[in-house]
Image (tube, rainbow, N blue to C red):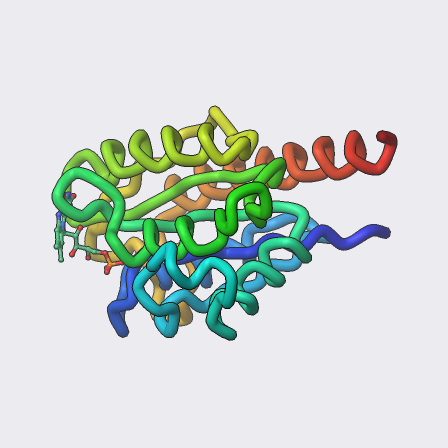
Amino acid sequence: MMTYRIAVVVGSLRRESFNRQLALALPRLAPQGMEFVPVRIDDLPLYNQDDDARQAEPVRRLKSEISGAQGVLFVTPEYNRSIPGVLKNAIDHASRPYGQSAWAGKPAAVIGVSVGAIGTAIAQQHLRNVLAYLDMPTLGQPEMFIQNKPGLFAADGSIGADDTKKFLQKFVERFAEFVRQHADAAAAR
Ligand code: FNR
């Protein structure tokens, strides 16, 4: 059975990040044949176009991890009704130099958890805009706007609430199918 590698990009660097907890809980709900690989973005320099011709080692590492994956999962908080700067910084780095973007054609999904009632909805819309420009086909449904409430995560790091677990399971199953379809279509070309 083929294994599909999913690069997981978390938009928060916070030690106790709810989004990182979500990113670590999701693989437990995934069907077989999916490997979720967290990618590091906290050691990237601030993007500077002057450096395009000699990208720093962490940038080259990020690009190689994205290139080696069959899909990308973005798990991000909402900061001031948009995506966090650290996430945009990582996206910009791996999109350059012009014509050598690591993101192009990679199937993606977006999800996020916030303390606010709209559960990162606006950040996700902003992110979808960026991903469309980067030519990343992005899973449309189910949308996943999660508000952090007590009991969302169980003590062992899994998803605690049964109804949320059911929604999340559907989300990862749909994403797995989406990635498979794109990988199969790419292999047939
Ligand atoms: C926030 N937070 C927030 N929440 C939200 O729902 N909409 C928003 O626009 C913002 N804006 C915002 C800006 C900044 C700079 C911070 C630090 C926080 C609150 C946010 O949801 C909360 O801090 C989450 O816990 C962040 O996610 P992690 O770090 O737990 O993954």
